[in-house]
Image (cartoon, rainbow, N blue to C red; front, side, top):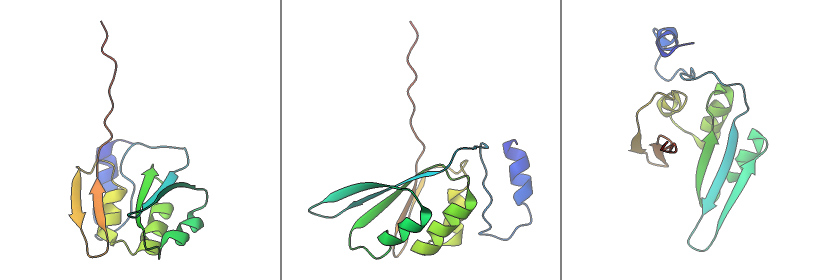
Length: 122
């Protein structure tokens, strides 16, 4: 489905409605938690979305790294667990969103584009 058709499906829906906009993907989402403090850090791959609850009340700073945002139910559950605003979640599932940074009271939200470097052909 092309980008314009995806955006048209969103027309008329209330703000904060989660609808993935971007390339159609079939693989599972991979989620890693990077948690750190002044003295230590850890990186853990999340096997089940229910395991993410273990990071909800930690004193550490946790970075949620998601490879893929196309399964809206998973992103919605992360948002529920960490109390992420629905408009932020709406931006997350829109892979055409421009890079940006927003500071909220309890979290910092960052959208970055992955940099890819192709070999230069000689």
